[in-house]
Length: 322
Image 1: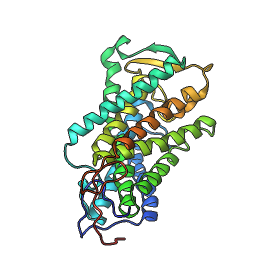
Image 2 (image 1 turned 90 degrees about the vertical axis):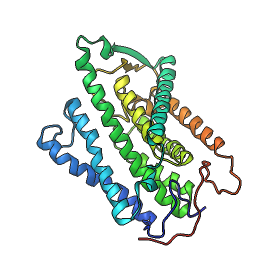
Image 3 (image 1 turned 30 degrees about the vertical axis):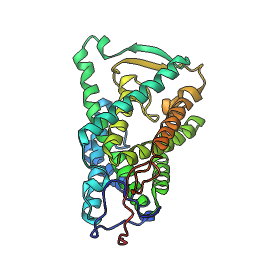
Image 4 (image 1 turned 135 degrees about the horizontal axis):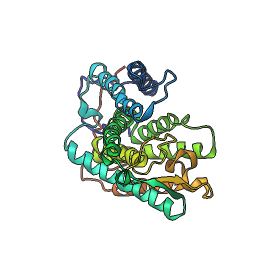
């Protein structure tokens, strides 16, 4: 179904970026934003010239630096496409949808870690922040990084599900928007660790996550919940249990408990070096979540066209843009 508007109705003054150009521009936005943020990070000692993060402060700076990517994307939407933020999903009931998405993201992550632990995938390597001799000092980076992951997770949602998916869906329908944005999102994680079976599984799971969270956003008709879900998952994964976030490790005392992956447990359960996102437990959770969203989206309102995820959409004719 062509002409689907996921988040807001379309004005005759809007420009619509071509699909091929949008795929390239998404990468340009990310590279440009990261470059802008990296320069002061290197100058002030938060990052190495090679791009590595120095301590948890470097991690925090990098996460907050994602705001530059969001800024570049929003500038394109508002200045070139002549659209408002509602058109990329920042519409009504923002706090409520964000907090609900955050709670669901925490629940998903707790479920994944709990199942892997029940299968013997983890051993306890150390106590959490509340078992530290200096609780305040241990909690400080956890709180700062919570805010950082809100910026980072929301930025990735703005680029992929807020802008890219909606642009493609407006021309070719939700299926194409979901598929292409999710594949690009997965490929952006393809160099996180050395080539290995867990990297392959991890990238496929990231693609599947893109499908799931895209359905979540489309069903709500909003990006707020997807931002909350993404931020909660990354934060609790890295800061709650000290596990790898898509292959990246945060060097600080975790909030709950410091878990270590047991080498005798098969990598396809634990995810190996990629972390839980590289294992089949995450695959199962995302498949079930996607199936539930699709099943709930089958209901159609009388006289209202709906997308595959069950969100009301606009199918009015619109002008072709650049």
